[in-house]
Length: 496
Figure 1 (spheres, rainbow, N blue to C red):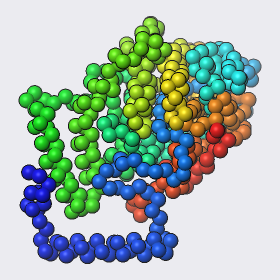
Figure 2: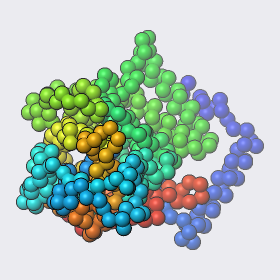
Figure 3: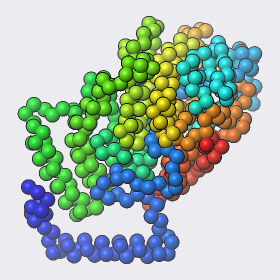
Figure 4: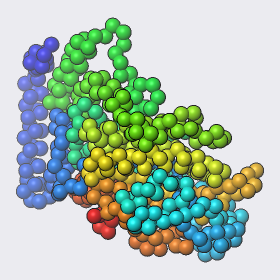
């Protein structure tokens, strides 16, 4: 049954026609009056029949695509990016009571807290002289392409609310993620792949779950689509036995025609998202195999990403066999998605939450992630993609300069959560290369110079995509929501 036949079968009654016309005329009149009086702004994208239609930014954009490498759990910045010689000099000493008095920790006990130094060796790299520890030899070679922000701070010290704040701009679940806001503001350049994809490397998962890439109260078209890295990349991508492509297409067309009629009747934007999802799912059956077929990649490229590295045989709870290859695969897949027009890709790995066994666990994670991340940046650059692809490497917070001595662990210790000062790396997409911005104090306890709140980070990312964070809003429950809530400033100093 085609759309015209469905329309004939679903004719509105005269009463319904007059009733709905009354509301429609009234709504149009009110909208025109508000706009004339300057009380309404047309700053949000139209939720038309194609929610992912490409849209123009508010102003000229520097970035078109985003790859967000999210190292869940909180990497230790003073063991990786932010050397603090004072920590080693004061190793084993207590902090002054004035610093501990109003401080909240997840697990650390204030009465036994002691400063902990680091065994890591730091060196300066690139013309910019950017510091990296000996755990990151590959990423260090990208120093002159990176912007290192050492003064990021957050309001949350527990994982889930901190993850939600870093990914969605709010510690409250149900808000749209950064990737969703980008797709809401700009739409998608790809017709055959999702606008927004999340790649979660095999491991412990992520405590905040899908809320970290959810569209929240935005239509579901803007939500991240989870791709796997084992077996079929997309679940249920193949038709069941007996379902031919022709039968499937007829079913999809029929369902979408029903949804279009219902959309015209109710104006429900979620139905437009549902239509788009059915159409995209149909196209994914042909686009996904091509996307995930790496036979066209050279052996040199696969070696650069570290596909065939030997995995160290250490006792670790940070993921099972195949973790190194899975993370390398996801980094390469992110590049391939960007080439095919995907707007935003999350590459997520858990967990960097090192409350104990800091030295072996951190070394294991860095050996897994360092080479593929560096390869991704270099690969994007040599293909001319880094210029308009923003790469973000970050987490929800950092680690405390204090050692966390849990009962039973003796000297095999780690570091607790620390939102007061931590490091985020960025590259490409209009970011100033070889830039070291902000500074924490001599033990990494708090920001000493050029603080960058999570809201400031989000405002800057949107700005790079040509979006004014104060204008990109969505009205729900009587107010206009935005990614940066009522705060946020663009950090102009890190923009090239």
